[in-house]
Amino acid sequence: MSNERAPRHGVDEPASWSAARMVVHYSVAAPSEADARSVASALARRGHRWVTVRPVYLPHLDPGNRLFGKPEFSRPELEGWWSVDSVVDEETPDPASEFHQHDCEKAAVEAIGRAHGGFWLGGSLAGRETMLPGFDHRGLVHELDQEHAHRIRRDVISRFPPPPEEPAPATPLRCAVAGRPFPPVLDCARQVARDQEARQGSLPDGTAWWLTSEADDFSDDHEVIFELADSVMHQGTCYPHTADEIPLLAGLACHEDVRPAHRALFTTFLFEAATIGRRLTASGADRRVALGLPLEETADELAARHAVEAAAPHLLSRWDGEDEAVQFTLAALAAATRHSASRACIRHLAERWTTGPRTDALRLAAALARSDDVEVAAVLRGIAESGAIRPHRVPSPLAPTRGAALNLLKTLVEREMSPLLASGTSQASQSL
Image 1 (cartoon, rainbow, N blue to C red):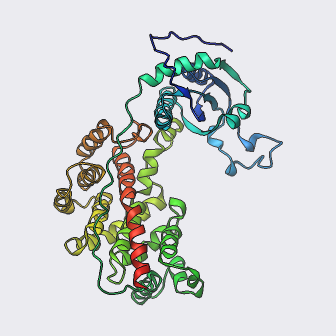
Image 2: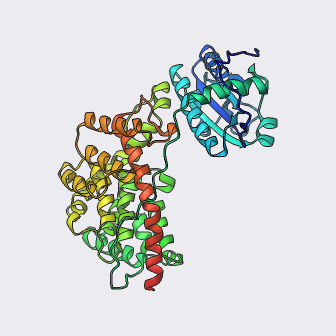
Image 3: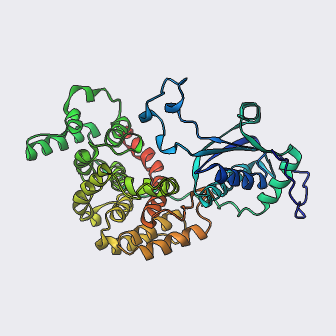
């Protein structure tokens, strides 16, 4: 164990700095003990107060654990790997800077793990009174006293990029307020399901469920919409049944008796289903590369994408008759399905705004609608270099370009959907 001393680099000691409210725990997986110790030394040089190195704990190898001998409930792929855990207890010039410092440090720790053949394993933040006594010191290899750690951290923090400027709130995407009442979304879902049954003669189990009395228990449209999305991709995860239930969402996304704000939401769900595999591949690229896992979609994820690709042309053909909010989500759908014919529509929509997240989203969607990853990479790089992305959201250099861009596009689309959902729920209440 060492108590490392780092040069001060002429950093001032501003009396106004105070201890951060939250202490942060970082964890990195490394392929060998030597790699883990190199990671640990790099973290200590960044002012992490305590750094430990020990084998990754795997419950299926521990005779005292109830999961012993059950690798399906553990992480057998990490057998032989090492875990580097550390704590950052730092100061901050003002409360508003604290979470930006966390974001920047997470990005730096991920880069260190990646450089040593490893990957980000996890982390947490908690109040000082919770984190410091609870940190597991087994395998401690570096320890810094608080004053010295704070000095190093000030120097590290001084080199962080400035925090992204929060854009001014934008006017919500426009949806026409119809002069007629809309039926409940549940009624529309049942109509779509019956129409599908009449065409096909049978329904997937998940779609058929909406025709049962059990579906009567939802209290409002908001609950029904949430359940429709969650039943297809529970907590954003693709399942074997996901592809079979895409036609129900697609039918609702173009149903004339579904209010525009809700049609926009259903289109967003289709975008998420079509991109889940590529987005997960990008967000988990460091881990997959380190473990030698493929950077490609699973069979279920690919089936879901193909199901959305089959439904997308009809939805996109409705562009001219849709409201601004639905057109915005159709742009994302075109990006997900590489519908190059929609690029002109996307660019025309983008002319309504000159700057901000909405403009970034449409620039990215227009690039993704083509099969040219060079253009996608250029747009993605431009958005990242503009400082509009929080540091820990900048894609890994190992991430496939298209998946990384779709991840960012999802974040930008979600930003627009929250006020839209509130607006749609409010309109529904007024029409009852």
